[in-house]
Length: 162
View 1 (tube, helix red, strand yellow):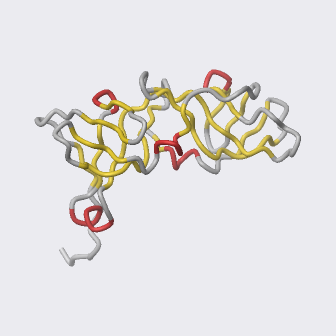
View 2: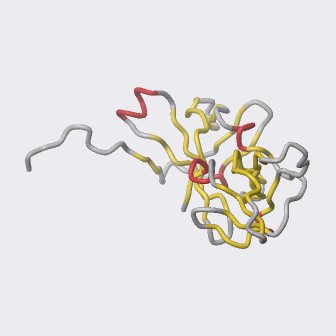
């Protein structure tokens, strides 16, 4: 599993070995819960198509090798980043910080939500399942299952002599 921030800054090459650009964002289909492709900042000023569909990716390691660039499709993650997540009871759970992506099929497994700097330190970040979310114009509605709660807690900040 990778996060969106793991892709940002990756260098993109075409099949001929020519450097096309670097990844600046991901495009997603929120309702299907999949990554549609990557937006790239091209090194060429005259390059119009600055999007790589996941179907066109030939190799994904430290760099991305693609067969072609196409037109953008889906929702840019930067459009939903920092969007508030609200529970079905009306409580604010936090803001969207990142997404977890399964590299086998480019499915989005969860959203990483943080409610503030102090809550990050004491409570950690929450990982919410995208299947239980509805994307609105200004916020995301999350109808949670009270039996399951995922959290990402910070590691020990103080070393112990044990």
